[in-house]
Amino acid sequence: MLPRREVLAYGVLGLPLAFAALPIYVHVPKLYADSLGMPLALVGGVLLGARAVDALVDPLIGQLSDAAHGRRRLIGWALVPLAAGVIALLRPPESAGALWLLMALTLAYTGYSVANINYQAWGAQLAPTALDRTRVVAAREGFGLAGVVLAATLPAALAPGSAAGLAALALVFVPLVLVAGALTLGGVDRDTAGAGCARFRPDALLAVVRGGVFGRLLTVFALGGIAAAVPATTVLFFVDDVIGAGARAGWFLAAYFVAGGFSLPLWVALARRWGKAHAWLLGMAVSVIAFAWAAGLGTGDDVAFALICLASGLALGADLALPPAILADQLARGEAGAGACFGWWNFVTKANLALAAGLALPLLALLGYAPGRAMRRPCTRWRWCMPACRSCSRAWRRCCCGAGAINWER
Image (cartoon, rainbow, N blue to C red; front, side, top):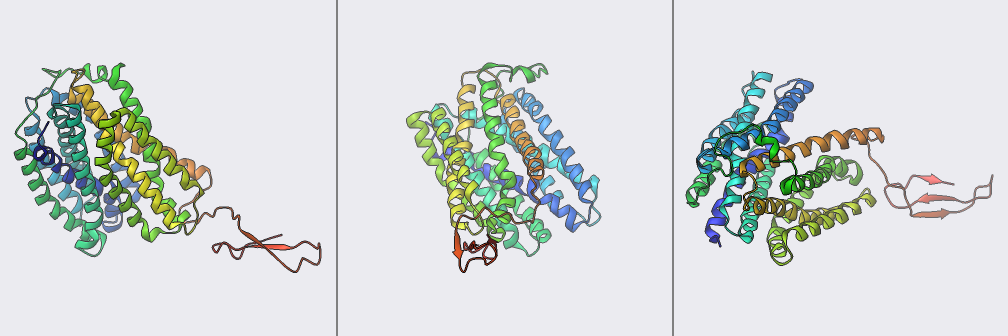
């Protein structure tokens, strides 16, 4: 078994990688549209183009990485453009325009993709046993969740105003990635070379996903990822317009991610006892039950929604730890190159978010939803009010659930 020290040292780098991903995907659109005054359509077009290219080149990056002699060196070099890209994105000059945004995104996306794909492939090949592979993935994802929570809470704590907070966040990221990189690359002595590809072969890009165990696993991962990305895309609208608790959205998200982090040891233990596939199925069942309960919520159901966040966060731990560990088990059998497989894995992860937004948001619009317009559930608590109506001798009833107290029905 891998020593716990090496497992933790490997996982540390997951913190700055997740820390960088949150502002890049969440805060950059608002920063450039609000603070720099760029047209929203132009910002959206640049982001869409950069993200599409980023997702499409991930399998190519993975294939090229498999032809390299070692992964630690690739990770170390990739952290440099990642740090430079984050600084350029979050601390733009006042004259920054679409070209600056595109170049900064390209720099950050390239560094992040090379570092993350090789980091995941390194972990898959680093662990000698099936249990170790689960421990390695759980450590990486646990530190990653800590990075997400830090990136979500630090901007407001560092400086008032979104632009000033993000500028300070960029300065925090540089020493963070340096320290984490030194701990991971220096604390884990073992390196892994590309497996299965002595040289770059373009035909191997598609051969990896044609049939076989990896193709079936990637299909299940894609379907489950789209299902999980739909609530991730719509949760802020739901909290604001259905629950009526937009000011507490951050607390709900924090509960979700913290529950996911604390559940990781549980899923490692369940995977050891029942097997990774069965534990992952249990996580899917918990997720389905938790989100189905949300359909009956309405205004003021803050506590109920907080419980849903905790339950779905529990299922999040299974989604984070078990699918990559199952993939690592397949790679241990030498079926394909680790870099190529994780390149496709990252492509599917990024495509899931795009597909969820492209499917869920237009469907909501077709169903008549408009952001900012509160949606009320049908009231089932009515009280009959007397005297009866003189014209038809029928009593009137009034909704007495609190939110709809002025709604009358005969």
